[in-house]
Length: 528
Image (tube, rainbow, N blue to C red; front, side):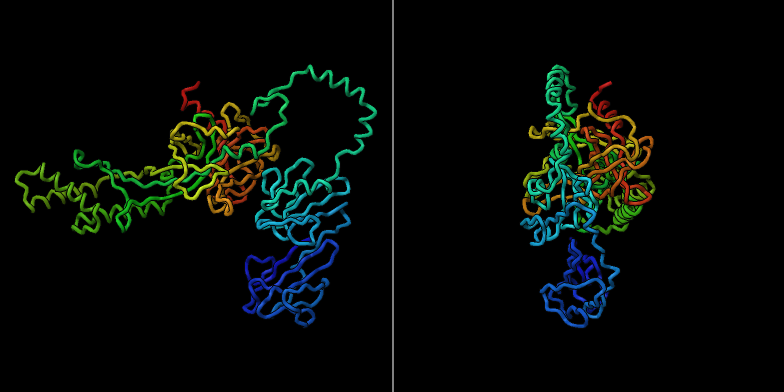
């Protein structure tokens, strides 16, 4: 079953380019039995079947090939997808708020036709998100719309914010039903085997240390991944400072209102020990070193304008008047019998030296804070403060370490990405399943509008090609705000730190290998 929205809006499934077509003109529902239902959504200029106008908000049944017109635009049936042959499956189970679904759910977050589960004739179950507004998650991992994902008993399925796990159980096939018969025959032998197994020691889990642990889903590590909100400003330092005893040689960019130009940004970080240390990207820790050529031109232009204001005594800002006072204090202390003429001459020499001086462009952090997933926030001012303690110093290894100001990892975070568990072997392309947790697009996507809590995105991925010396590429788009996200395997071992997009395109992301973060961490703590 599939819902097709038709109209002039770009958000529609079938977009009609006409000034007479309403933005959300009509809808079609493609049923699994082949039937097609059409409904005009109270459009301005109407919907016509066989040149007969249909009543608004009233469903009518049509057939593929019928003449249908939306205002002045005829429907091209080639644009309407053909529903998959239901005979290929044992069962098709539709989920959503519409009454036609086999599983009807309610709430503000599920869509009318939210997801579909298909049971193949060989007893396998596949779940597909039908392009829902708020997504479908399996074990905390959000599904890509239109992509079939195999599920099994025990998997937790969330549609929007509704848990449908129990409602799916009656439809899910029981794995290997012949086992019941086989078990009755071999029960005695099995008992003997169980007795023997009792005395076989089990390896402890590398994450929790418990023997016999069956592993940890990606959702277990969600509390350890935090949202980063930070702000910095540029600092210009003159190499030839003509009055070092009176001035530190630094100039800070200011706007027209004479306020320091502060640049906010957002990212992701994750805990790697119990002393409040977190891993993220180097470009998160020292963002000013990743300025664009355009940014640099703006900064240099601002420096020229600042120096020019002292050449012509065109002081427009209090900060400029303050620097002029510094020049006067210098002249008063170094020029005997200071007169106005001598002051102007001293000032001209100073500004001339500064105009000829080389300068460096760096930056200073105004603040760097973190917000925890699942917590209720009314403002980012409520986030906890941290600081940068280490960064790689090179673009090749885009990694850095932060630390909470109180030097503590919250006690309620049970599982973290401990350095001793990092996976430092070379990844094989398209082999092992990997996961990433982060805040792509920051609070725009992460802030739950109902609960006002931060909710990171959990995504399944895979190494896409042979890793280079420092990095590896992974499947899936990398979006701003996700920088600093952990990438880890099914055992919960960190394999890399997400840092950006491939230069060739946006369908693959890139990450720095975990072994370099481990090296930097050990160096920071003085370990061999």
